[in-house]
Image 1 (tube, rainbow, N blue to C red):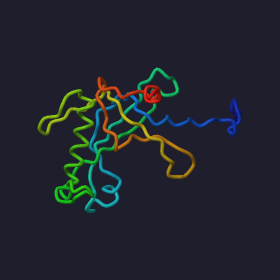
Image 2 (cartoon, rainbow, N blue to C red):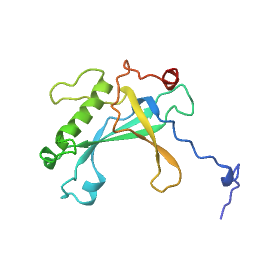
Image 3 (cartoon, rainbow, N blue to C red):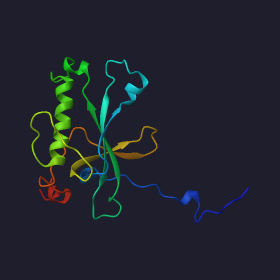
Image 4 (spheres, rainbow, N blue to C red):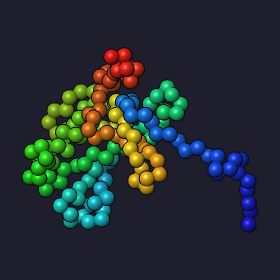
Amino acid sequence: MPSFDLPKSIDDVQEPEPLEEDFYVCRVVEDPELKPSKKMQNNPDAEDARYNLVVKLRVQSDEPKENGRPLTLYLPWPNANDKTKLTALGQTFEDMFVARIADTAEALMGYKVEGTHVEVSAGQEAWFYVEKVERQDGAGFMNQLSMNMKPRKLEDAPPSSADEAAF
């Protein structure tokens, strides 16, 4: 059986550090797709089984340690049950999900969504807020896109952390 010597000990390998929480310009790298959620894959008849609009993004940055970081946005696509099911704020889940999809599409398209048509495609860019969260296995931290901070159009650049520190 062939054997090989690694160029360094596995004990000396450094894991990548997650990005700091902040807004980052992200580019859509593949045309988004509607894919079944894990819940739908496991139980298609469940009340909250639905599709997700899956948007694959990469961070665009002049900083080599940030540039090209992959992030995936899962936007819930409303199902028939979402028309009557209410959030804690009294909004239907359908309206909440449609608004979230529209907010994302508006940021990426650069103009307001009118009616039901949105266009999200590879190459579009917007500002997305990246959070640092504990990994599910408890072994450190990872990044995810915030569902609580709306994406912003490129021309609506958020203040940088350095600008905020000046106040």
